Length: 280
Image 1 (spheres, rainbow, N blue to C red):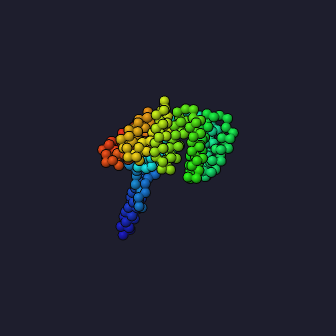
Image 2 (image 1 turned 120 degrees about the horizontal axis):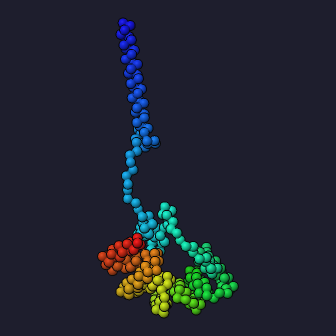
Image 3 (image 1 turned 120 degrees about the vertical axis):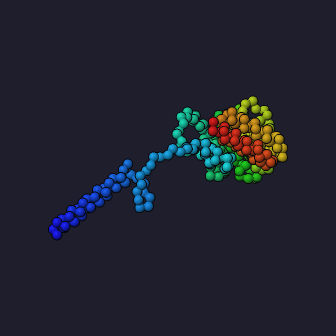
């Protein structure tokens, strides 16, 4: 009987040891390779990470994101922090006139902006910058309503008078054309745009924007052929100047014209061309 008890004790000890070894082995297996993922109440080892496709975030934002082809054409493309910053040469410092113009146009009310610009103009020594200031002043007067139409017209006339370059003339004309269009005077706006563009010897960024405004005026007047030609010229000039925002705006406006006139194949072809050019 003592011999039978010894055998049972030995068997119990042996089973206990085997269970302990098995539990230890299982613990070592589950904890292999460091931290593991948890699913429910169990732990699983992480397998090797599969390589996936990457997204060009910068291009996505240009085409689809903020300011992209499915959003407002006037919106600027959103910048992403994940995209490596490119080496850029520092921009030249803004002149006092440029700073005054920006602050006036971004003032809380047009009246505040008008006061700032008129104060700046009263002490202005460099008349080469007067055109920019008067163009902004006319824009602000136009924003205050029809009662200030005369002051706006006088400011736009001064902007045209003090213009010293094609860029100044195009900027002044663009501001005036936008104000006239907002008033509903598309006929005068079209004449102003044509006069500024036809007499220019160089292509400027405000001039390309003015050409887009001119194309829109042609479209409003029902002359789709002239509108298409003006949009195409703006697209070519913006692409050559590497002006991404202006290029996209001109493309999208022409796409809208194509779709409005039932030319869907041309619209789709232009979208593909735009995507390809923006990606290059």
